[in-house]
Length: 289
Image 1 (tube, helix red, strand yellow):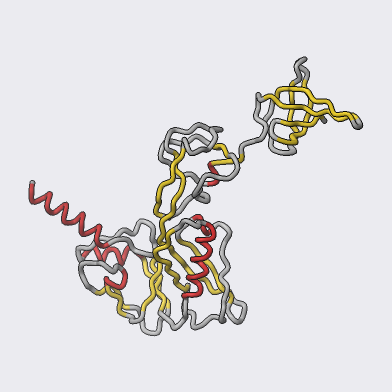
Image 2 (image 1 turned 45 degrees about the vertical axis):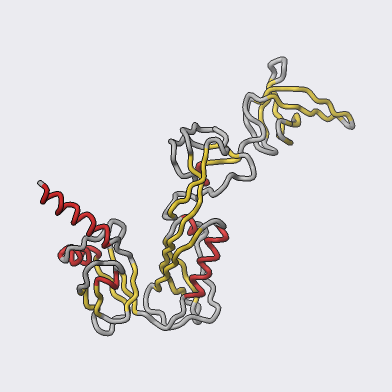
C-alpha cells in the first residue's frame, strides 16, 4: 500500500513539473527537445525533427504528449489540439509586444503584466518600420488571441499572442439577487490570474450606480454583462410630475408603474388611480406627455 502511494505521489508531482503544452513555438534548430517546449522539464529528450527546409510545421498535440508520457513527464494538453512551430527570424517583435502591453494597461490600469508572448503565424522575414497592430475590440477579455499587421504589400500578417498577468477584479462576497444594487457591501476586490472571461472584468466600483442583471453565488468574478446602470426611476417609486401650460408649471406626486432611464417614456399612476404617459427628465422626476 505504501509503495502504491509513493508511486502515485511521484507521478503527481512529475506531472505538475512538466506543465502545459502551448499552441505555438519558435525554433532555431530543426531538432526540438523537451526543454524547448517546457523550460523546467526534469528530463532532456528529443521530441521531433522538423523536415529540412520547413519554416513552419504543424503536429498533433497528442503525438507530443505521448512522447512526454513515455519519458515519464505527462503534459496537460486539454486546451491544445495542434502545435505550430515557426522558424525564428531576425524580426524584432518588441514593438508589437509593447503595443499589446499598452492596450491591456489602458484597459486595466491596475494589471500587473509578467510576460507577453508573440508568435508569427508563418515565416515572416520583415515588417515595415513602426508597424501598427490591428486588434479586435473584445480581445482584452482573454489572455490569448490573434492580431494582424499589414506588410509592405498591404497583406495581413497574423500573429498569435498570450499574456501572463494578474488583475484586481470585483467578486461577489455573498449571494446576490437579480436587481440588487452593486456596492462595496456585496462585493470585494481580489487579485486574479488573468485568463479568459465571458465579458470585460470589472476592476473597481463604477462611478455611476449599477445593479445586477442576474443572480450570483458567492465568490463569482463580476464582468460587465452581469451589471447594468440603475434606472433613475424605479417601478413603484414616487415621482414628481411636471405639467407645463404656457409659462405656468404645475407639479404633483404620482407613482411610477414602470422603471425608466433618462428620457424614457413610462406609465405613471395618479392619486385618483388614473394612468398617464410621462417622460423621465431626472431622478424621480417626469414630465407629463
